[in-house]
Length: 390
Image (cartoon, rainbow, N blue to C red; front, side):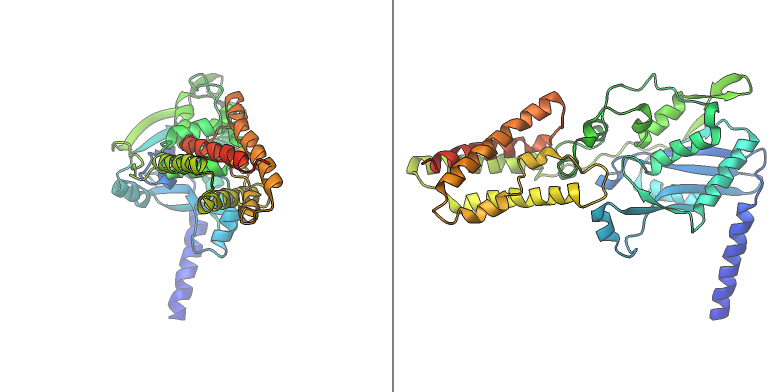
């Protein structure tokens, strides 16, 4: 058994080095592969990869920068801390295509207009990066992902021969605006992402940053040109639809965040009215509201200050998910903190009133589905401020 295993390793080593030293023929093609979105949240943005095909050498490989291993050591803790380790996978294109055919997701191919020397440079670059010592990289969903890698590689290979055309891109957009176009607003995925990420996403971006999404890689490559000798030609030589499926959508769910928060808002308003009428306070409701919102605030502060995520700092969702609420939820059990609580709920009201100001002036967009939740919190804090008035 050990002998067979040793022979297999030798075979893989020889194969790897053989491929790495291959000289592509004049019939070789380098293509950008764009796959449509799937029905799951992690598939909502589609996918990008590079195909190297040479019929003379019977070579047809996909280079996929979207590979990761759930079973890798400390995967989940690294994920939480923002140390997302992805890797470049190289395998037969037919396997890649089979997966998307099974999921019924469209796949389009853009064959790049390259000289033989550029094709070889492309191939060697990908081969070097597919080697085990180079394959892993720190993934960032907005700045260093499967789509931005393709942009960076083409810029590296073509240099000043590349002419990006951005005339057809809608200007003055932010990363959050582009992201929210891909994910329906009334889903828990959209709510969770918009809750966790700060106002880095709300800054106006450059055209290169548009290409964090596969759709914009496809669009920008289609519209761009390159220099060949003294003339300019289209960067994409030909475009082919390999799989033609109707674009998948994220499936709506009955208990959407807007529905859940609307029901919560109604419940809070009813309890608040009854409390006002009977001059009392629903202690269990207040403890639940304050402790829960405070716990969310603690999580947001952790993401802000104690992780390496590039987009979680400066998150003004802490204006409503206020971390000190966790402490106040226990202080409210006692009845001798009237002055403190009166002032505290006044402060919470002011923080909530800042949210529409931040939203309107463009400092940060907040989850749309959270509007009923914010309304509920504001009216409850108004009542609690009145209840603890000396």
